Length: 252
Image 1 (cartoon, helix red, strand yellow):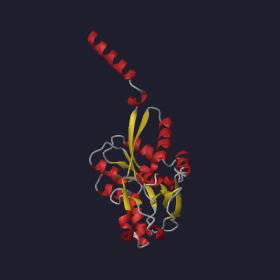
Image 2 (image 1 turned 30 degrees about the vertical axis):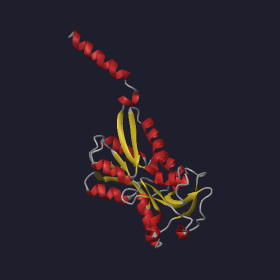
Image 3 (image 1 turned 180 degrees about the vertical axis):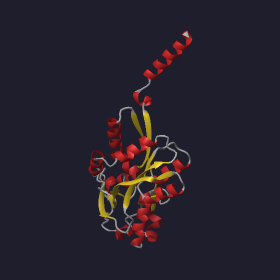
Image 4 (image 1 turned 90 degrees about the vertical axis):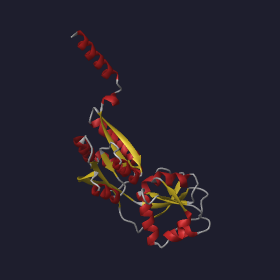
């Protein structure tokens, strides 16, 4: 009996010594890279509204995230930058279709370095010899890369410009390439371009692509179903929608 009491007291002391987040109920959210800043703020709001809950984020290209889920990564909620990736996840029975909702929308823009870049004012100018490198997302895994292909195919420029493409692993890598002057132009979301106003300049709003809408959905293998549903619902609260609006996202 005395030994049991010692063990219990020891266990209590160990739990008390844990940092608050380690003892909290954790929700894991995998989200498109373009959502990084907005989701971090919204995650903090969600934690404040639910004491004892900690939100852990994993940001990357949507196609990379669904691959991680397919390989068994412990994820509760998935937020994608396109419908195609979620549709594939539902078809593969990785995601719970009935929980899917669209919470934000965006636009694709063509950017160039803010200073010292090539004279680019239109898509046709990308064919100029002065433009040697065009940063685009990898079409297999990065939604903005697929939107970019749609834009350039509509303008009959995809094949003619192919030799200039610099493939990026995410929309944020495209942004970095252009901001550092490692590419004369690139295609990103409007919200990403707004993060570096002194480094990049928006040339035009791209046309000819599918609407950029962001779906959120629960992962089938989640063991936090109630909490996952709560987080999804929280994205539609006035406070969360205000964060999206501040970062330049629009209503889907």
